[in-house]
Length: 132
Image (cartoon, helix red, strand yellow):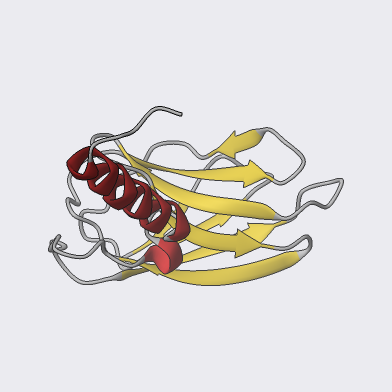
């Protein structure tokens, strides 16, 4: 059996814990701003209607043109869910992505959040309705 120096084993243990913590957060679950990152502007409401046929639960993500996607939450079949989202930048393109539990995904048309207080997306239509 090979011995691993104490410093290296401690580093590997801390790295493993850090990765496990990142994986358990769900990439910003609930549409919350990640710790230590300030959002620009107020939160916006995001309404998603899952009218997919056949019905499958989807996980919805907000995907900015630049930066990391952020998980908003899940929407069961034949249901509508409301989420809150704090944009880091309003003047760049965003898309909503719905990952289908059985595999595959659906993507909305791009939109910006300048002057927007709410977003509504029905999965059967790639066009997002913006509330001002």
